[in-house]
Length: 283
Image 1 (cartoon, rainbow, N blue to C red):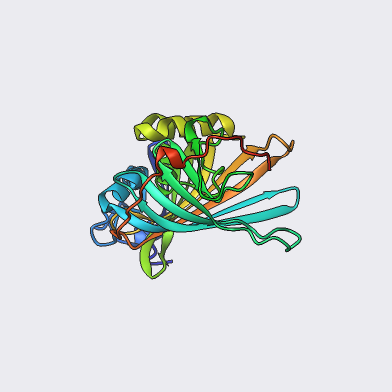
Image 2 (cartoon, rainbow, N blue to C red; image 1 turned 45 degrees about the vertical axis):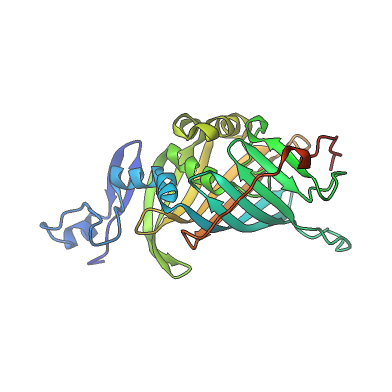
């Protein structure tokens, strides 16, 4: 297949070019490597792995964005999807999402959206239900959650989702495509939560460390789509954890879409008097 760029797989710092015939067709002067100067970024080898690992830094440089999230959970033949939408301030690590819960199985109950505020080490939820007054917020210390709030809140914190990629152990360049009209490079790989927790920003070290211990495995398969600036346009993680009420693992697919970079993202955390201090009923 003349002219087709070779697929590359990176594992632990080594690059393996796939498709020798395709490489030869590019010509000896072009070589098998890719500097990314004319293609929007590297597609293989340690250079591509570095860009994926540093995707969180590219988001900080961008400042802010809008975000859409989707959390699909499946166990025992039952599948539910929780969706969210909002904004995120990457420099201050603050986000606001409106999370839509799935409809009641009987179709009789209309569930109000939950407003979530994402902050370093904390998750705030309003309209939480479970006996919490409608005008009060619930605060959760994400460092104490066995999943590091990658699943609990019904949406993965966009910056935390990016920091999971700091633990990238293997990486394959899938190809070039588009996400919402933006040209991107699609990579598929596996990240290690323990490694990610060691090199993450201080606020995410404890949550990611908790997730590494709490999930069924610390290895997280992912697909990520990066634009020419190395920013995440779409990332999909696949988690597996054991629910305390079920013996079998729960499969979770978390998808985050990021767009409208630089949009105003004024996120204000609740005052102490607005945080509910009472008991939360079991659901």
